[in-house]
Length: 200
Image 1 (cartoon, helix red, strand yellow):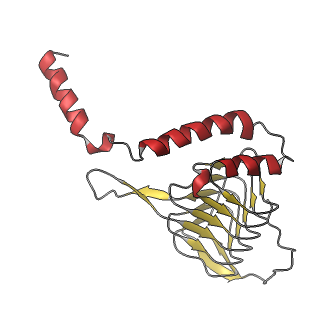
Image 2 (cartoon, rainbow, N blue to C red):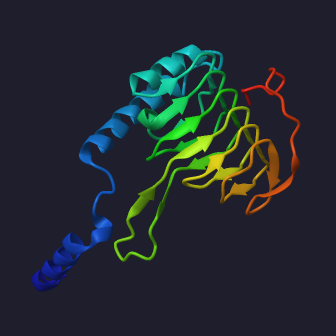
């Protein structure tokens, strides 16, 4: 590449808004530190050591209630944006991508390989900026294996998002929802007495 071509390429790169960082330096440094702690202390921890993983998450700003079972292969992008009430279950290989706040209410369950996706991009904007929105999973709700919750969605109390389903809109309390996009197929029997467990 000639010096002139190199100069033009440098100018284009420096002025290209897609190359700008989506997150502040402090956020990136926190995520770097959390990545080290996750790799060395969280991920290798034995499955029964839920209290140890709760402690690590709290050290990075998570709000974690009593008797939460967050398994070692669960991936939590930003612990400081995570709120778990009591008796929440997050299974191995579940992904909580939370640039915005994600709240898991009491006795909710996020099963294996489920994906709570807290951000998207504005594809109509030439700069393609990140757009984050909070997610709330209601008490006694169940996000089944490989299901996906899109940004800004509220899963109502006791609702079920079935295997591989995608929630593109809020789900009614105590409803059972399947498919892409998820649609209601029936009501779920209400149960707040403990037989609906908050663990995967």
